[in-house]
Length: 179
Image 1: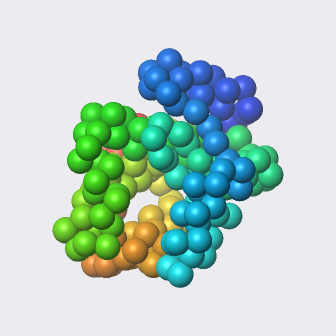
Image 2 (image 1 turned 90 degrees about the vertical axis):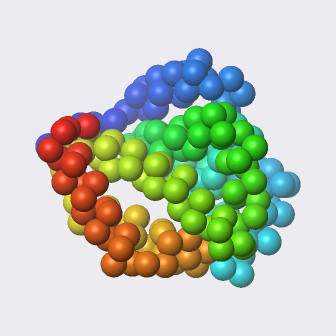
């Protein structure tokens, strides 16, 4: 049985993040010129950056649009905010290093650094799914695997079998220790 997440749960989480992370804000890519420019630059390898992906940049969680946010509903927003909060904390803790590792994505050494940041955030996604649903389904592992190994994230970890093993071990550990 899944725990129901309401709009109030999302508002409470946003308030908690604002208290913890000074400068935390929500933005919408379709309303921001910089995000629109980024969308044009990344379009050759991620054609859905502006319509399907949430991004963190300088303390702001950028959703594709207000319409998208309403469409996906409070559960997805709650999960996404917890995932993105990992990035926000990492950006604060490792300020220069974190931002440079994203800035220099085309370099192979930095692609693997991005994979490390994303691994930390997707581990949180798995933990939250376990907390809310009591399980971590194969479909979530499939989704994470696609994110790491597709052009959308610049093939940040192209070793599919290696990644799947890590995902399976993390799921086992989370199921054993609990969320």
